Image (cartoon, rainbow, N blue to C red; front, side):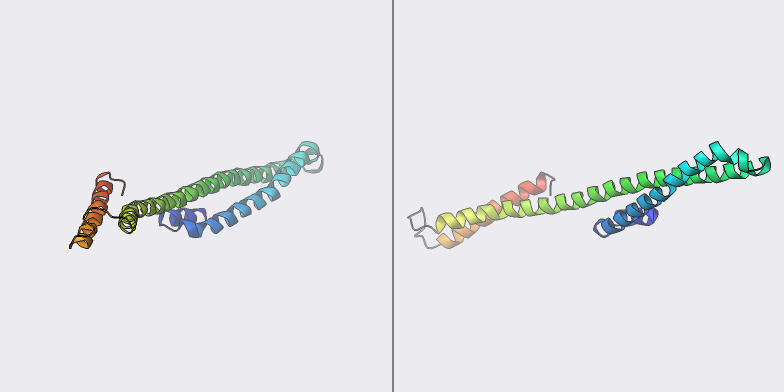
Length: 161
């Protein structure tokens, strides 16, 4: 499951993987809750009763059970670290996508702002230069296109967009 989640994160499906990461994390936590008391119980049994109730030839097998439980615990520790790293990676990927979206919206806002200002300025009921001219509308449109074009070039050259 962890390998599938990791592959999906880097294929651009980070938003879809949030629930699966959470479910996998809960499974690991539940399994750790099961194994932890068993390990301590096995250790107590080994220390106090195994030599009394088990013949010497079977004590080796009892040690194998404890070793297997410890290996499972170590594996769960590794899985816990991996799922936490995947969770962090997922958050980073989603945050990066959000930053790209906010950058795009900021650039669009910066391009619309001069248009709004110029149209608001020339929409007032006060006399402004060349307002009464025959080509005033086209001059204002050219001014808007020039300012927006200048901003677009500036954004393009700043390599942020």
